[in-house]
Length: 354
Image (cartoon, rainbow, N blue to C red):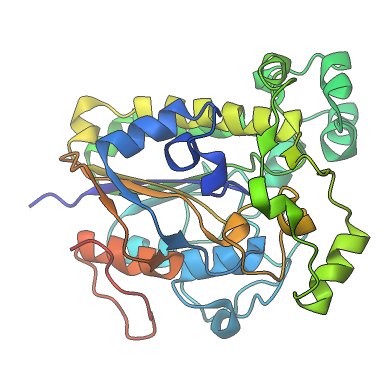
């Protein structure tokens, strides 16, 4: 029997509250929503950690960060820790990772060096993206595009963005004749809608007057919450007023833009590939958006940053919803079971597909 392929798509800072099929909000995530309509939607899926590197460590090593090493950002897993790529490569898969890694112990942009378990021809971390830009463009992307006006003044279009170039590489990978000769695991890891908020100007126009209603979450005075939550709120004041409305056109626009990029990659699957490919979509964690007087993410356990979207489309297109709680820690064992790869005892996760 032919072993299945895996297309694993991940965004950054996109909890369920930013995905239409979960939130019911008028945010354009039509490609993700279509995937949910064709597949299995997990309604109670949770990240291993509401912080980037620990979350990714749990997802891509299959063990919790307190075991693998990354207790915070910019701390790499131990060199003795195997990753998803290693397990699948050792099992005969062509393994390809395109996009944000954030697991090499370096800064946000990474080192640009491809780990040996992934295909170096397609590796495209932040440092690789920056190497394609001019000095002026690097300065813009790092710290010069902080408003709608900045994007408009610099005439930013999709060709400038990291997301578009990630998608280009993913589409190219799928189009290679070799894809028909061996099973593949391709991870496509987008930075959006995380800061820096870089997307074509036309996406911003959709959200200039859009306000996200946080409801009762905006009224929390934190009186009965941990002290560090109050300190967090003081250090990073919420922009949400008494009306409970969160307004961030750049964030909403990047959320829309990355959905279109996801659609490009999914639609690039040939009919033959689709018949033998599991498509998995998730995000590493969410964004507080002013709920409970907090912004960004960190040491809190609110659904705003911990409850993440998880959608799995089987080659047969089984459609259903799962309310049973699952975790990112369950993804690697589940994928290994689907690929008929033996799960080592060190992985604590459970197979989440009956």
